[in-house]
Image (tube, rainbow, N blue to C red; front, top):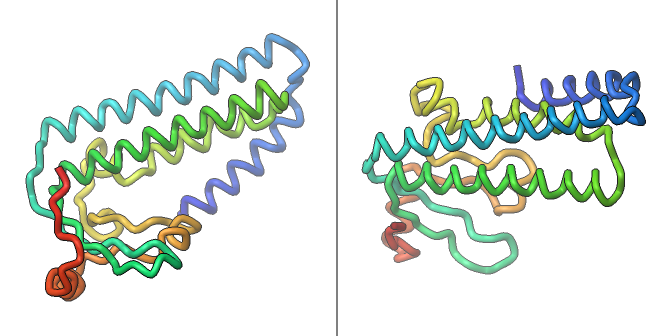
Length: 188
């Protein structure tokens, strides 16, 4: 099933459950806070584990792809040459940032604005997302890096529009970028 549809179902279900939870009771509120913290610790622990697997594999297979130009910048798409291990490390850093941004936003919403209902939903959705992430699918669950899991990964939904399109890794696009001399600097 599509992850966005399951997220919607989980959110709607949790909204119904949250109506029945007495958030005014400090015992319940502290329990929900604990569940939120535990959820984020599990996610961070999972990402630390994925990081150790990536370092242990040390996959030095070359990966070439063409990154789209930022929208309305007038720049040309940029050729990037890296290794699979370095690419996975970059994606892992982005996943860490996403978790920390989520925790920061939730802290502002809960501590400053006194919202409590999102604690319950944010205890489940990010955890679900972490287990569905492509890094976890490949490195923890051992799925082959083919089909949707083939690197480089496409940005999903809203982020794809913000980045100006898809990352291209087909031979024609890479050769065209090499001939045009766009980028080609190896990421270390």
